Image (cartoon, rainbow, N blue to C red):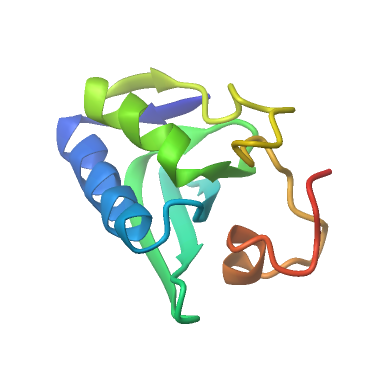
Length: 117
């Protein structure tokens, strides 16, 4: 479940996801929560890791989702509850993947070196 503190946080995260998805429609985003903040990590198609931190929380506190699947939810409602794992188990979306222990934020977000599960 993704909870954002306000509409500006939802707008910031939506803009980040839109930019990443514009470069790679299949980009995965690792959401990590803690201390009242959520950080989204992604790796752009040319290998550059990027991140954005907004006020809010996410449960579980470390989940990888498809930017293309999460973006419409953020655009529809910039603040409130959103479940980034709602497409878990759908291999066509790549959502709901919990990274392997020890995976780095950018490598896990790009899905490099490991499959779902």
